Image 1 (cartoon, rainbow, N blue to C red):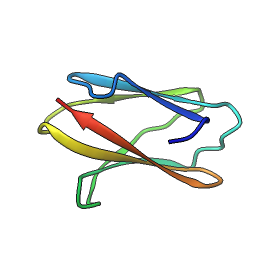
Image 2: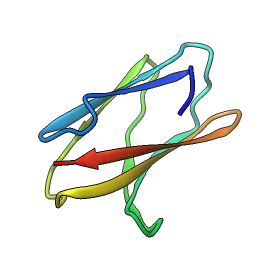
Image 3: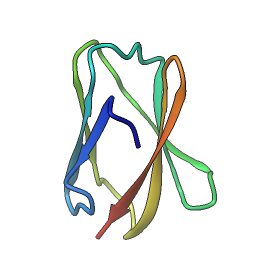
Amino acid sequence: ASKHLKLFPNPFYNYATLKIDEQLHISGVELLNITGQLIRTLDYQVGNEIIIHRGNLNSGIYFLRVRADNTYVIKLVLE
């Protein structure tokens, strides 16, 4: 996706970690389904990572939309 963002593990089963470069000024992180529908808004505190918990999500392909100076979209696979 970007040299500023790293997502692992991907695919994941229980949770994944999104590492964020300190240079990015994040304004929001959203989880979208394959059709682009908003599933969840993720809490982002100041820091350099977000833990994405599976919760009640079904297996499949999702996308993370990270809003910063630019908008980044990362493909996320849930096993």
